[in-house]
Image 1 (spheres, one colour):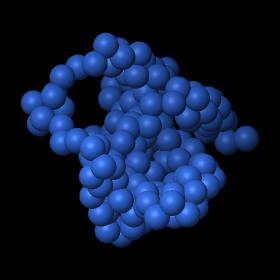
Image 2: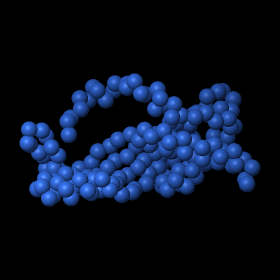
Image 3: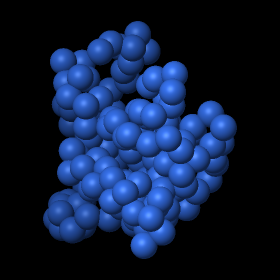
Image 4: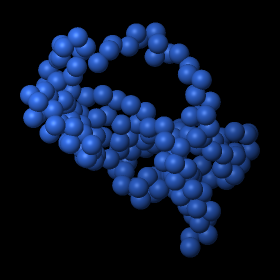
Length: 172
């Protein structure tokens, strides 16, 4: 894997405004605690376990663990094993969500909710090509982190949250 210059991590990509728009919604509600409660319930419905909740500051963190094996990786690994090459295979992943809710006005009637989904993936043993016929062995347990940018995941969360915020005060 090519190493990334730490200074590059702080650069804003041209896609950043679009990603932020997918991650953020505004809700009309007087009750920030109910908004946080509804957010936690939606995450739990999606299979997440709440790891940290600080309702007083509008912060919530949740996670779930899943297999990271993909069908295409297994086929590629079998083909490469036949030719005496190895590739690392994604084994396990931890998908996390960090949510922040904050009031937008002094009356506290409008709240901005921003959620970020990201995952850490653990790889199995294999090797990674370094070019020019060189490869580097990757032992089990190597991991990588990546942001989840699929707009559908964020839309699905916010649709459910919108329904929960609407239903919460009426206790239907």
